Amino acid sequence: MARRGVSRRGFLIGGLTLAGTGLAGSTIGSGTAWALSDRPIIDCAGWGARPNSAIVPIWNQRPVKILVHHTATPNVADQSRRAADSLARAIQNFHMDVRGWLDTGQHFTISRGGFVLEGRHRSLEVLRIGQRQVEGAHCTGQNVVAVGIENEGTYLDVDPPGALWDSLRALCVHLCSQYGIPPTEIYGHRDFKNTACPGDRLYGMLPRLRTEVAGGLGQRLEGGAAHKESWPLLRPGDRGPQVQAAQYLLRAAGMRDVVPSGRYDRLTAAAVLRFQELTDAENVGMIGGETWPVLARPVRRDEGGDAERAVAVLAARRGTESVPDVVTPRVWQRLLGTGGAPAETSTDPQGPPR
Image (cartoon, rainbow, N blue to C red; front, side, top):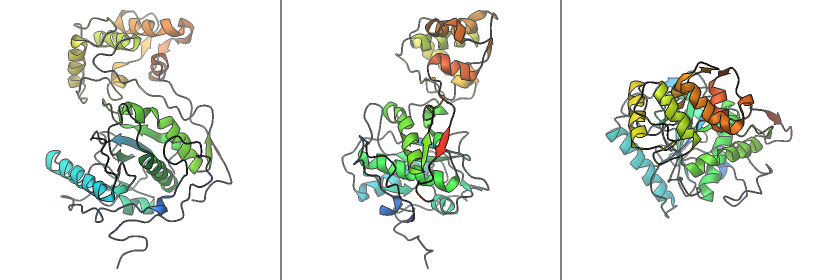
């Protein structure tokens, strides 16, 4: 007999409502917040998942963050339930047959039609309890501390459809509520890896997502807390001070073939690949959230060399008075123009019940 709230068709989350959370100004979706209970999360059996090939590890700890991904698949027009099920099966087949993983890598998948599907087996069971974490395979270094959400499509230069956005917001509200995750702890894949995922447009919408999720929890983000510290994503063809600073840092790390021209050229791309191989990073020729923390080492004032030249390139835009005696990672982010704000929330006692 099925447990209460669980069926082959899906997993119904009751008691969660986002009504009255101040989201009516939304320009994506209908502007009307809806609850996950309006459309059940489809469990693995519901979309025809294969059995996992090995035991799914479960950790006796709560996840502390949410990672947003995109599938980098075509932005298909078919937004039906049938298309959502087919997507989930295709992802699982790829992850198991090509990647060699024991199951789907992410915990949840959202289709372009707004259908929310369980990804890795037992993710819904564990979410319902709200005390443990299913180990995923969606981001190296984050798989036992972060819930991974795949969003169908490619969002480099287009926004996600409204149905997908509404489901992403509702799912994040429920995840934060169940696990006690602050809404400021919603990140993009590129924050931790050298990847364009979840796409420039969707990544740029994460401050809005944090704000709307906070509203769904009856909270307000204060002092720009929706904007997190991050690292810029640099790709071949990019130009500017960020690129020049990275080139000086590469030279300081021993990549002496790089010419600090401010243009991400062929020599720079080759140096980035060599540096990433040496540091056991994903070597895709981009400088992102995995490589920047290693490349942008602490730099002391007057130490000389290419590392201090990298600081000088960025300080020229912001004024030398903004540079302390030691440039730490947080200072690097501020100089690079991707510094954030401290996470602050205030609770609205009239917010929705948990």
